[in-house]
Image (spheres, rainbow, N blue to C red):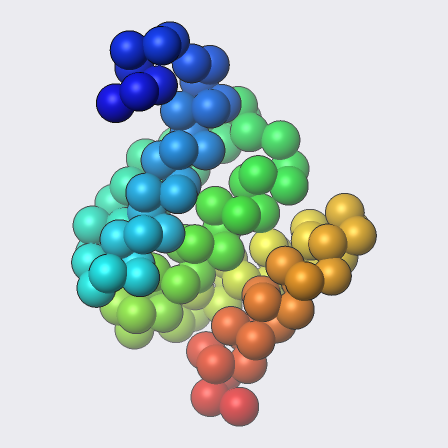
Length: 105
């Protein structure tokens, strides 16, 4: 809401939407989160690579909760690769933990 009043950039709006989607996953609404994430991914060309990796990580969380594990695994693996490439070891580790969870390790 504050962003719409203050007038933020499209990238900022997508970042805020990503945070909202992550919150939806954390509060037990993965189906709603998956819809919101898809709306963000439909505009992926606007996002820097590291932000897109964060979106894919949240997508993987939601999809895993929905037991759409093939899609979740693809998103988590890509996010991990980008995080590694950008030197974000903690985010890469979070993605790796999610990958292991999806694989049932």
